[in-house]
Image (cartoon, rainbow, N blue to C red; front, side, top):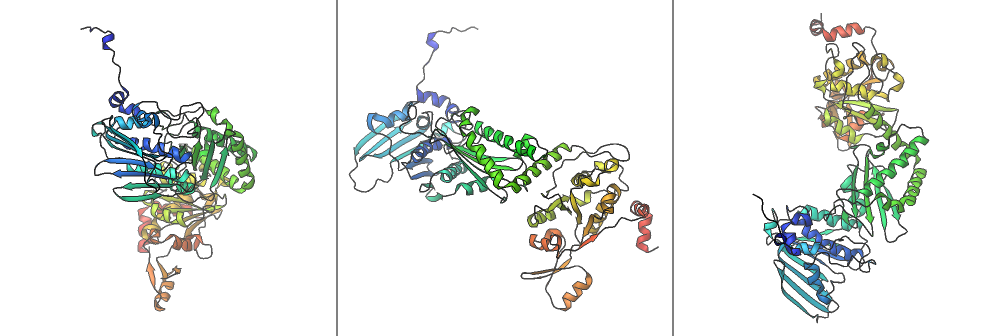
Length: 599
């Protein structure tokens, strides 16, 4: 049935009513009231950014679900009923004038925050100490119930300048318990980026936390898995002061290739990235593309993001965000052109002073590109089929004259990775029990473990094999010193002998002896390679430790057993002239029985 539609159906909502009907439009998620705390915190941070506050505190009372933010800045102006206006009228504030006399750089931009906090709270209170005045304003369900301005008669310093306290209305939120981790991240970012001498405090149910991280500390904790060779800092300033763009960056060689980046704009963590991140990425791609061309190294622009870790900190006069929640920056790329010249100069300066590191990075990018391009192995010499592999397990080294360690399982691999020299030692953990017998497995190249082993070599197989493309000077099989370990070493050795015989013939394949026992006395660690050595040590009363496998050795002990050329014990494997007999032994149960019974 058609209904009438007239001017009587038009309804004009008050600001508070509109916020209550559409809270998500103003504060994003309504899972919990954390965004309300952030709105108040933004105003306190603006006072600190402007150089007027050096103490900011956030108070959380989880028993009564009351929250407060206070600072010792200038205090909200009291005249003309300003505290009531900015708490009840949308789009009110000191950040909309052509000349930003109050705040040049600010976090709060839209004049919405305090009104939304008031609208979505059952109780909302402002206390202000300003110019020998003490003012109080109390709202209940967004309606002003009490206000008073009086002389501040005490001679001492006021306890704060502005304090805003509120109690969220539970009918607008799934829970009124705030996301404390998010508040801690905000305070961590602010403490890391603000100038020295500013104190950030979080008090949760009378338990006090202070935030005093440096920028480098914040970068390391947020972005890095391990300490990189070098951390670079780039400071860019615009001719349009006080705008600035600061970058902390590093490259991790032994971690995920996916770039990891955090950023902030005017102290706001911008978790959704945005145009500033794209600008920085594009500049890096252009820089490394030019260097790769100079050194004749294979490169694609996105390769420069491989292993990148970065922390971008911007102070902008006119930031534009995708929404009220400010999760993404949307200023056009041209907005950042003011930093172009300075950024390119500093990148060039880095390249000039760190040429060896630059070449290492370019080689790393080239290896990454080769892995992506190697979607399939070379042709199987028997039936022309190809085997594909996900090239995921190899922890490579930077040298093209390094050593590849083939080990059983992630436990042993992890220990070697911790003790190795990343420039020299590559590690490939394989699941030993998943390595098939090459003499009986018809489609051997389809096995994931064998595929990754061959791909790691870089030589290809069959008629396409090229020894000059071998990526390491030594291939070392390192397994546990027990029957299972010996069996796995045999299987790996057969793969090398049947599929990659030229590597064995070239004297580049070795079996690493690993000890079952070692003298282990305080700082003294001596691996024992034979039963005779063990007997001698026992007779001498030495303290012995038995190791069931490589995974039980500490990284320092593994370094002695496997990596240190002065103490390790490698057995070079020679290629047999009777390979057919070897194949027969591995493929025939009868031949194995003969070996056991001594026939």
